[in-house]
Length: 436
Image (cartoon, rainbow, N blue to C red; front, side):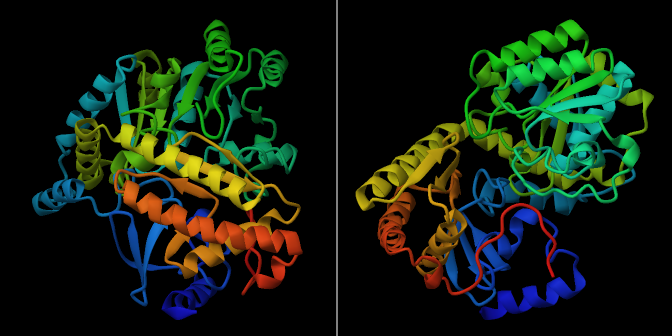
C-alpha cells in the first residue's frame, strides 16, 4: 500500500472527498493501490512518497503541465518573481506584458482579465456576458467546472450534464431559483442548439462552448453557432481551459476558424502554476466595469511570470508540433497493439489529449486492470494520455512496449471472462460520487 495510500486514508477523515480535485482521486484510477501523493516530479517522471519512480503516461497534472513537470525555463522565471516579491500593494507590470502577449496571439481580442483557475474564469466570463446583454439564460456545450451557473443545469434534470465529461454531478447547494437558467446541448448537434435558441429567444445572454475535445466539429457546427449568436446578439464564450495550447500556441479556436466574443484559458497557460485569463472584445469586456469582479490573488505575480515564460518557450520550441507527433505515436500504438492482441478498444480525441475506451460490457473492470498492471511496470497509466513537451519518442516506445504486454494480458482475461478476478482491489469509479 505504501505511505501514499496510508496518507490518503487519513486525508479522507479530514478532507471532504479526500482531495481538492475529483480527477485526482485514487478511486478514479486504482482504488487502494494508486500512489495518491508525490514527493517530486520532473519532466514526465513522478516519484511517490516511498521513492518509487513512474513515468506519467496519463494526465500530466490534469492537463496543466504542457511543457512537462518542473520545467527549467518556467521555474527560473518563477524564482525570479519570488525573489522580487510575489505580492505587493502595487500592481505587477507583468499584467500588462502578458495581456499584450495574449492579444498579439489573438488579434481579434482587445482586453484581458485574470484569475487563477478554469472554473472561476468561466464564472467571470458568464458574469461579463450577462452584464453586457442584461439577460440571464446560458446555453452550453461541454464541461465548464464547478460553479453554480453550470451545475444549475442539473436542477431541472439530474442527468443533464452526464454527456459533458463528468456524470453524476449533484447540484446540492445550488439555489433552486436558478432552474432553467443554463441549458445544455451536445457537440455537433445543431438541431438541439437551434431548438434552444427558438425556445429561449430574447432571454439568452451567452453560449458557452468547448471548441474541441474528443471529436472534431462537423457540418459547420462552429460556424453555424457563430452565425446564430451574432444574429441574435448573444455573447459567444469559447472555453479553452482544456483545448488551449494543444493544437497551437493559444486558443484552438484559431485553428478551427471561429472568432468568439470571449475566450477563457487556464491549465496549460501557467504550466502548473495557477494562472487563468479571460480575453475578449472591448465592447463586451468593458462590461466587467459595470459589475464587481475583484480578488486579491488575481494580482499575484508568480502566475503571470509563469504564463509569459510558458508562452515564450511554447513559441520558441514549436511545442504543438512535438505534442502532435507524440500523440500520433500513442494513438497508432494503441490501435496497432489492440489489433495485434485481439483486444477491442476505440481510440479517439485530438492527438495531444488522446483517449481510448474498452469495448466490453465490463469496461470499467478492464480499465482498472490496465491501470493495475501498468502501475506494476512503472507507469501512471489509464485510458488517456495527455502529451507534453517532456515526453520523448524513447519514452513512448518504452510505454508502448509495456502496453503490448498488458494488452495481451487483458485480451486473455477477456477471452476467459475472468478480468475482475485478477483485480487486487475494487473497480475504479467513474463520474462524481460521495466517498464513504
